[in-house]
Image 1 (cartoon, each protein chain N blue to C red):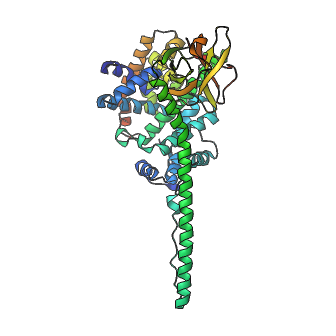
Image 2: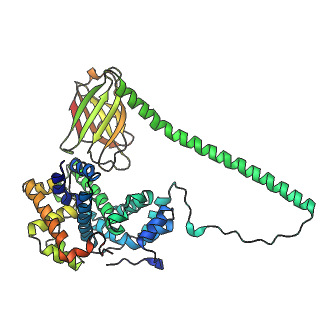
Image 3: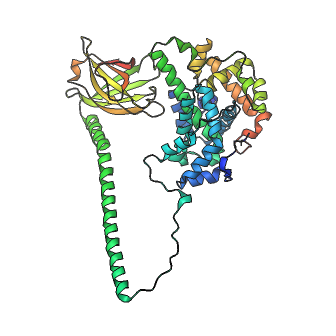
Length: 198
Length: 259
């Protein structure tokens, strides 16, 4: 999967990061053109609100601009790192939103901050990446659901346990087993650090 | 947290599914365990693949420009692609007197520019000193409170809004001056602050101070100034309020404890 760069910048991510360290704002623009859409897609799916999703993307690139050394190339490629930062920011917002709902005694609390999933639009079915969708389909439904609640809806293990009415230990085990299986999946071998994530 | 316990948490960590306190404990372990860092990197790569596979959505128009504007806000920067290249000028022939006059003019201009540059630097240094005065005064106050021989400590517990949050109030029991420290509270958004309330036995509340910044994990500290001796207060509480503070609590209690 690629996110083409408008303007035809051909510099790779590492080169652009080096230019960001030299305070070249054009490099920041180029990375935004290349990866902004991926980050926005993730944030929008989690927050279901365009303005908030754009702010998450902004905050992610601002972090790269202000603290470029926080990205360590030896630990993996830039895009997964950016996605990790954006995910963390979006999770913060979701948890804050839930807190505010509790704060205002809003009955929508039960929705856990983002719209309830459409039964016809399951997480796996919406995924564009065939490899990840195939790998997820190999998981038991309960493990797949735990991963979705954690990753897309930003719930902690404790919140997932409350939401599902399951023991916390069961939820922890499901998440651990699911991620171990996905990590070991031949379908996803390319994504490991040094692998083929674009 | 032992290495085995941390490894049990890495999958949830990679999905951002840990409570703040658990995340802090894992972060602490990761600073000294390259094996766990390696394992976490692999799990985070899996998590990022989930993100990459989500349905695509187009960024709103102008998103890049807004991001760049924020990045450049208040920062000195140089566009590397806009470096000025001075054209090579053909040097005309002048009489010696004209050269002398020209050199004098250049020296005078250079001196003026140098003086102006010094003034700019001086103004910058003054601005830096002024910006450091606030934090320095805050640290002075905190150090003086902690050094006081009879400093009192009161623990605050998270309410149902933030069950994993904890707070500490260090206070001089006579003057009411001190500091508050919070951990794992919901991170503050722009324009919001946590406000400490001192509650009298009759239920009336008075502000003890504001905490305007927390980090991403909801940790922060701030000096406080309780209105009067500690003995006149029965309970302490912290609520989220507008950044300027409120005259009475408008939000629900996030932390609370008895005096």
